[in-house]
Length: 45
Image 1 (cartoon, rainbow, N blue to C red):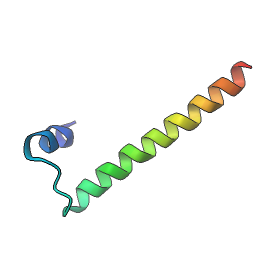
Image 2: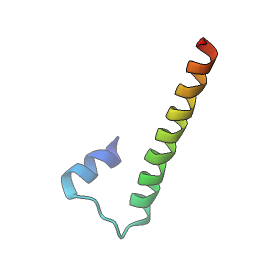
Image 3: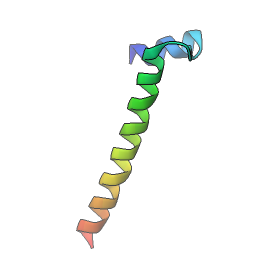
């Protein structure tokens, strides 16, 4: 959460490793959420 507040205040510093780790975490969370949604829909059928 603090990372997000820092990005909103100061912009997205693309030259920092932690920025790319943050983006990778968001992407991985999105993929995991999408896959779990498919699994839930499959189980409900």
